[in-house]
Length: 109
Image (cartoon, rainbow, N blue to C red; front, side, top):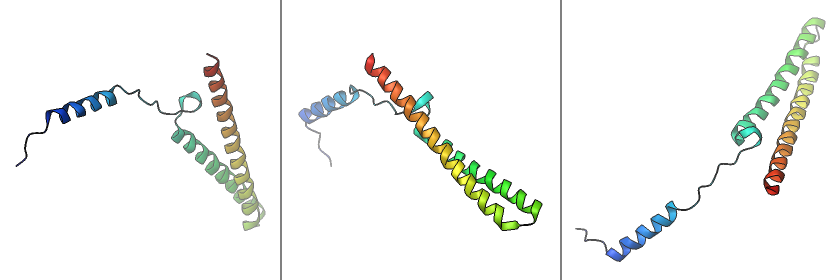
């Protein structure tokens, strides 16, 4: 059988709960234009995958046209990978600039 809790312990618990409720809420971090970190990550993954797929499709088309099946497919797949990486880095640079501009604007106010 459980006995009744001590009233002073209940008051202490109640005071701790009130302090916790009154604590400021942490705002979720976001990047430029209000995108979340997950949305930005998916954007970069899609940019990379699109670059690889487009490069592979172009290489495969050239190989079929000239009858040299694996050569241009490999070359243009690598070009697509490089283009995807370049696009991802451009996106990261753009978001970093917007975040820095927002931080400078907030600091100035």
